[in-house]
Amino acid sequence: MNDKYSRLQIAIHWLVFLLVVVAYAAMELRGLFPRSDRPMINMVHVSCGISILVLMVARLLIRLKRRRRRLCRNPSR
Image 1 (tube, rainbow, N blue to C red):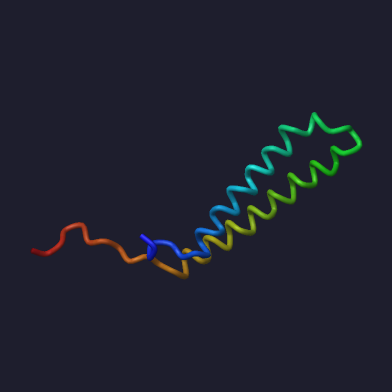
Image 2: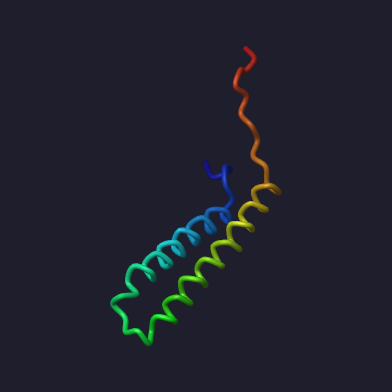
């Protein structure tokens, strides 16, 4: 199972997950902050979104570069 995905791919996957959680929490919890802090909360949300975009592009490029071997559907007997 370790040869299926590289450590870099797994790290990017979990980093994207954490960024999605932070971006979602920033928008859901912005009502708890004073109005003067809301632009900062919006900036956190946008920064997470841009970071997710960059990491997903990197993840796709890594995936294209490192192709997995396909399993044979009908193994010869």
